[in-house]
Amino acid sequence: MLRRRGRFDAARYPLITAHPVDTGQILEYKWRLWVREESIKRLVYHLWQHEAHCSMVFRTSPVMSYAELSLPLPACPALWNAPDAKRWKELLCTQQAEGQSVLRPTPLTECVVNMDLL
Image: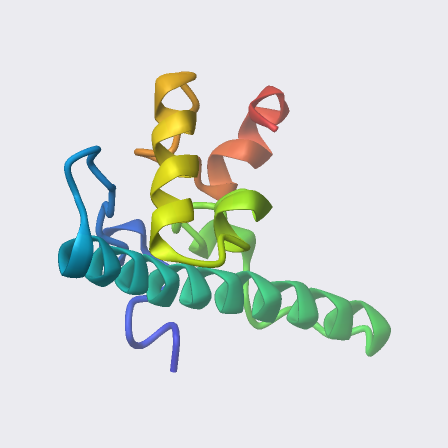
């Protein structure tokens, strides 16, 4: 289902950022949208990891390949565990100010090719 819905593709994950001027309902909407998209990313990677483990245990060919996954890696735990939209915005803005790549997270396929990205 995730494959058919295009959830392995980076194009399916819109860029969601918080601007310093975002407040109220706009900020809450962006945060909830980000949480939804992040949840799906984490589900895809969990499914891929589970599938890899099962294929090793049962000595079968994997159904999913890492080469299919062009979606970005999940966000850092601090962002994921933010208790509310305000804290999420603070963390996101801090990461952006420090020059961390939150705008275009690195996909798994690039990390496999260049381990220095990790």
